[in-house]
Length: 173
Image 1 (cartoon, rainbow, N blue to C red):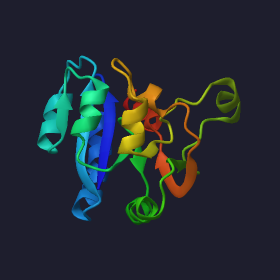
Image 2 (cartoon, rainbow, N blue to C red; image 1 turned 135 degrees about the horizontal axis):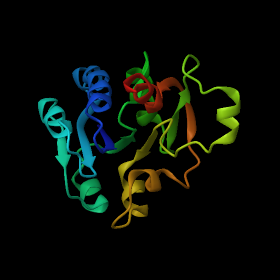
Image 3 (spheres, rainbow, N blue to C red; image 1 turned 90 degrees about the vertical axis):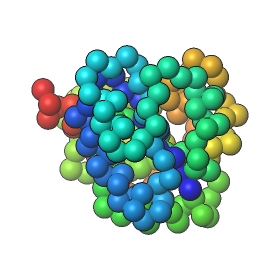
Image 4 (cartoon, helix red, strand yellow; image 1 turned 60 degrees about the vertical axis):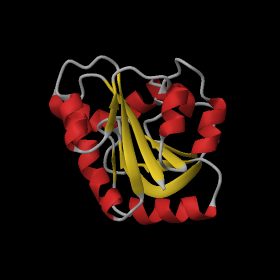
């Protein structure tokens, strides 16, 4: 039903955090597969992905990967991001009733300081992106990254929150 996709480069701890939350979605039957697109990691990212049963691509073309995805919907997230309580039911209902892309709501407990929020542009996947696989294939090009795929959509806002990946990165530093 849902394929989760993320990119990584030397983000073993962040990848593990995200995958641990996705287990509940797999148990509930929502998440059919997870795809990790690597950008030359030299840490244990591939071992973490393999242990979690993910498909790990060290060399990839986005269009080919999208065609191979099992789910009819894609959830694009950054390594380290974690959906919070209630995401499984909400996404399950959303994909059953809608055809438009959607994003998670910003976490109320994990916000950048005010001046940092207004001084920076929000990365395209900071709040994730849920979109139909067919729509993603239609706009994907060779050499495209997931962040580029996420741009240009007018997604609806889900009520479920997503802890952004910068929180996990901050905890590691």
